Length: 323
Ligand code: CLF
Ligand code: SF4
Image 1 (tube, protein in one colour):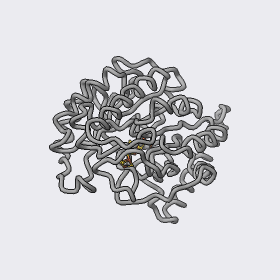
Image 2 (image 1 turned 90 degrees about the vertical axis):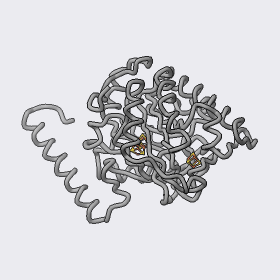
Image 3 (image 1 turned 180 degrees about the vertical axis):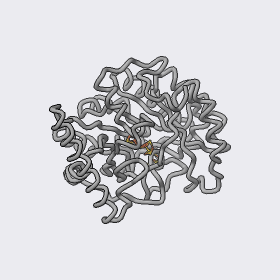
Image 4 (image 1 turned 60 degrees about the vertical axis):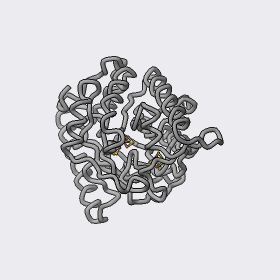
């Protein structure tokens, strides 16, 4: 499937989506390439704890399975996250997705569910999105459904426990520390089970895979085959950002990443516009407003408010209902 086509409503083995879900996909800047210039997302950094240790992760920073490392987001309480959403949503109505992507693993933090609940009650029209390492997905899926999450990202860096054992140093699962292949087997089993159950329950699942030369680069296409079998909607092959125990591994070149994406494309649609954003990013993917000057933010605010007023005027003149 070509990149231009990424508005299809089902994968080969996945379910067909209802109209409401199709709208959410079409307005999701990560799930639909065309949406990235029109619609934005806000990330709420409410989840500091993580239950695994990836070898490319330095704990003081954001989760690198969904974020850019080297920066730490200020952790918010659920109430602060709601207030931030209210304020940003009022100024930038093009934001349609509220995501929780760290700084640690969202499923390892109760604040994730409290936050989604608050947001759902106040903004039922917004899409709730979350990103996880998948370890707790089978046992937390019902909570995700209860709070209204509809788009879910799971990071799958290997489906072979021998390879996964080279990527994750250890996991902490139900109070016990596991290492090596034993840890990898638990995580992979839970990822498969959780992804399958999430898709069966109607979530639209995206998988992030960090491309690590010499570790999983030859293996990524096998992951893509498995994702097809599970009914995953879209896959995001991200380049390694070398730090932590993997500081000496050379990241893949753009060409190497492209070759892997092309090899995966026959099995699962490829996302190619990821910005590896921060756990507190907001705005369009290409314009992280959390990193902008106040002046620049004001300008965007004026533009969106004027555009909204102009649109209302035109619709008013035509006698049609407001959008
Ligand atoms: Fe955020 Fe992730 Fe949801 Fe998007 S980001 S939780 S799916 S709303 Fe998007 Fe950012 Fe790439 Fe993630 S560009 S890092 S893929
Ligand atoms: Fe770091 Fe994310 Fe891995 Fe946890 S899941 S160790 S926060 S990269």
